[in-house]
Length: 223
Image 1 (tube, rainbow, N blue to C red):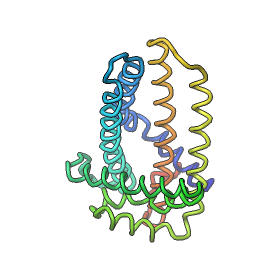
Image 2 (cartoon, rainbow, N blue to C red):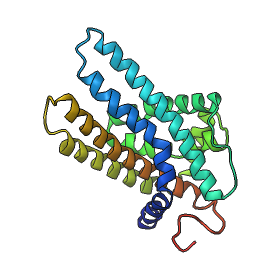
Image 3 (cartoon, rainbow, N blue to C red):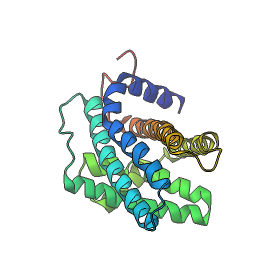
């Protein structure tokens, strides 16, 4: 796992500007609207929050589809269309919904089954976007592809969860905050949590592509 973490760090460092261009709109969107909705006194706040969460999820799914294509382009070195079609976006939405329910049910039964399911379905979004696999085919393919790798992926998921939990305690130590402070806090939290999520995705993609790469891997500093 140490090698994958090091290679993922180098990949992000080498492509930092491109990654920021992909995810900057999401950070701006959430840091501006999140505090505004949180401080809203409208009687329809609950409905607004639901619409906001759905919008954020839909937007993030679109950006993840773009990011997956970006990683594939960078790794392969071959030009690849990086726009996301409605069919691809919808497929990824459905995939995240189905896998999310499976992970949640596993976590309710006991935490470890939830982490295991998350690890086993960790390659499904790559299969859905890069190989145009339908939702359940992508999940099935991921389950097979992660044989012998699930333990490594589970360690990463646990690490991700632990860091995110610590982040919540550090950044949100107080209750009510003024709107400007809340906006800054929301931006910092979004920036750091997005960075954690991106790093995790890159490590998963590195494990996914490790046996598929030939030569001149962009993950390696001496490539």
